[in-house]
Length: 347
Ligand SMILES: Cc1cc2nc3c(=O)[nH]c(=O)nc-3n(C[C@H](O)[C@H](O)[C@H](O)COP(=O)(O)O)c2cc1C
Image (cartoon, rainbow, N blue to C red; front, side):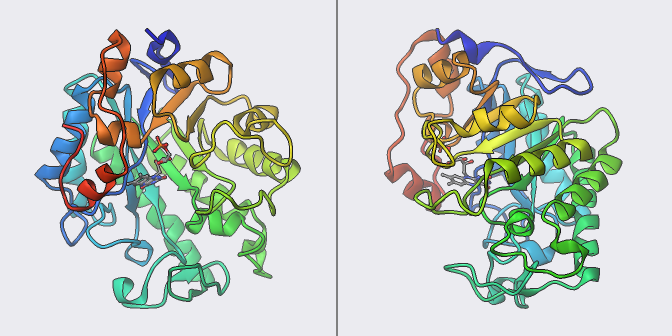
């Protein structure tokens, strides 16, 4: 059943294909060790999703540098000591024939002095709602973070990852550089595509020519009701073309929970706008909680891959059950409370 979901997904580089077109989207947990290392709880969390039939797993946002931490007890990849936990998760996925990639991330202004031991960093001084005021980064700090993304990518390959994803969405550092209402720099880093393209080039140099780079982006930070301004179809097209030229292979389009709404004052969906700018394969995330809708979205030509977060939180075997038409355990809001309390609601 729901055939479009079970076709192989082609990453468009290095002959990499996953067994089907479903992805476990990145899900940050608060169950890692205090220093960000992955533990048995997390390895089993990924193993359960791999056993449950998903095609590829995208790991939780993993800070590449200590200046980019966003949450206590979140997974990170900022030192070599962190490789082993990721490797155990990748091995668990591979044992089930499932691909695995890390999501490399820097929170930028979305953090707190107490967590970092210093003021959060941002392209320009900015206070994001709910976080502490961030200060403008120096040029040396920008270069340091670009290097840190490359180290994070190299560690991912050492852990056995099949691909890496860059977290350019949801108002974190990569997104902050793109946003013209946040990045007011007057040096060359004020150019909205430059930071992302330099990160992509550094990551490409680190992972080599055969490993796909997936790039997650969103138009909004964290408010689904926000206006699409300041992005326009033209500025989106310029951004995507620059990133594709720099080395991106696959888009991971985060629509929050709004993958069926039109963007930029039209009825045209965000992945359709993306297709006008780029022919790369598209993974789309946003409210695919039942298989018929997800399959229909692919069949309509809006996505080549579907990223599932809440569906797979609530039922680790969502994919396996969906494929044969068995009942799956539907998502409920209380599952997120369970997760925050350190219990896996999906097994
Ligand atoms: C608990 C939780 C943690 C998340 N963590 C991340 C993350 O680390 N990185 C990211 O890009 N998105 C993250 N997201 C967003 C999801 O990957 C996904 O894009 C979003 O939940 C919409 O998909 P869904 O409707 O299938 O849940 C998270 C979502 C949830 C519910």
